[in-house]
Amino acid sequence: MSDTNTNTDAESVPGNGFPADIDASEIDVGERAESAVERNAKRTPRGLVLRVQDLQKTFGGIRAVDGVSFAVEEGTLTGLIGPNGAGKSTTFNCITGALTPTNGIVYFNGEEVTGQSPHEIANRGLIRTFQIARELEEMTVLENMMLAPGGQSGESLIRAVTPGLRADVVRQERAIRDRAWELLERFELDHLAGEYAGSLSGGQRKLLELARALMADPEMILLDEPLAGVNPTLETKLLERLHELCASGYTFLLVEHDMDVIMNHCDPIIVMHQGSILTVGSSEEIRVDEQVIEAYLGADI
Ligand code: ADP
Ligand code: MG
Image (cartoon, rainbow, N blue to C red; front, side, top):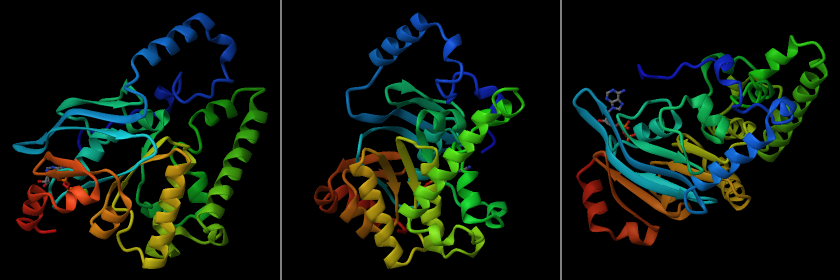
């Protein structure tokens, strides 16, 4: 993780996630129209939110990801599976900017995002869930929501010290609080809003992690084992929320060890093995695929 990008908020504020109304008067309209057209021209075929092309990541001599190409369609709950060490987490990290790929291109909504910082990529609407960090355990559930990456914006600091913009800050903080409550209710965590995050059960934490990711109002969320340690009742709840969110247009890429979950909930399913894509298909296709069966038989699942 030595190549983790450490861009500061201050560096990435201009033109990146900065609400359009703020400096609209300073933006040349012609320039804006042109860039929209340009952006459109570069779009991948309609409906493909994420496209990864020949992605590679090596660590010393290890080829963790070795020429991976796939695309994810809008509104899907796409599964990414493979035996331990297949390269799933490394692929996730290269897509979301936590790692810089050795080679290859990542397109999000038709625009190249390869090598951008996690902050920049999140601002574009592609985000991954994060485990509740130790320091956040000592904050309440509501505070966790308010401090979610992308929820509170870096610009609020700049605006707080700019005369005449304080009213904006107050309005923005209220909007963040409203959104936090709305999501807590949706995830049935509102009754825990005042509890320390550290006191939540494993399943409640996973719900909170997903709710936090939604604070940034992303288009696509990457989930790395969101059901690990979650009891069946909360698992059902979390899966219901994921399907609802898909139906309303959100897109998910899910890494999960529980094969029943993958087979019953994900479509399509991408199978990785030894850094490469073995196959992509529906659960019916994956279940009977000889290569997939072989990859899993020879591995420690
Ligand atoms: P998965 O998530 O599918 O289990 P990973 O992406 O974590 O697989 O790992 C793929 C391969 O890359 C493994 O052989 C792993 O040991 C190696 N690997 C992952 N991260 C690092 C790292 N930071 N440094 C060195 N090797 C790594
Ligand atoms: Mg992993």
